[in-house]
Each structure stands twice: as C-alpha cells, then as structure tokens.
Length: 123
Image (cartoon, rainbow, N blue to C red; front, side, top):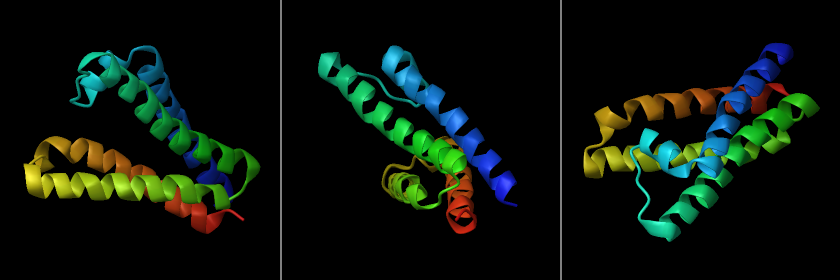
C-alpha cells in the first residue's frame, strides 16, 4: 500500500508542478485556463507569485513526501487544498459558480484524497 500511495503522490506532484511552471512562464495563458485574466503588471505579478506558490507548495510537498517517505510534510497541501475547496464551495453558493467550477473542485478533491491517504499511510 505504501508504494501505491507514494506513486499517487508523485503523480499528484507531477501534474501540479507543470501548472506552477505555466504560471511562472506564461501566466496569462495559464490564467485563462482557470477563468482568470490579469489586469496589468500587478495582476501578472499576482498570477506569477500566488499561483506559482500554491502549485509549487502542493506539488513539491507531495513529491517530497513520496521521495522521503514522510507524512508530516503533507500537512501543507492538506491544509491548502482544504481551504481552496472550502473557498470554491462558498463561491458556488454565493456566486453560482458550482456547475462551472465542478471540474476544478473534482480535481482538488482527488488531490486531497491522495494527500489524506498519504498522510495516514506514510510514516
């Protein structure tokens, strides 16, 4: 089971870090995929800084946990993904984004499930 969880964590990181690279290198294009648009240089800076940080921390923590066989670092993506999902659910209620945001919520719930499994399985 440990090996399967570690592979799932590596896949999670392997899917997340390219998103981070997209926000670093081509933030406007990466943002459009998520329904966002930068408004000037400060907006571009926010896309690069905030989304790079989010995706690097989630993916990097997942990969580090898998490679080092350590569950403690998974608290970082566990909390981050939980807050992201909570924010999306609030937005679904307040803004009516539920149906449109469903693919993103589903992806984040899947990542959270892998992270929780890793947190409970790894030493």
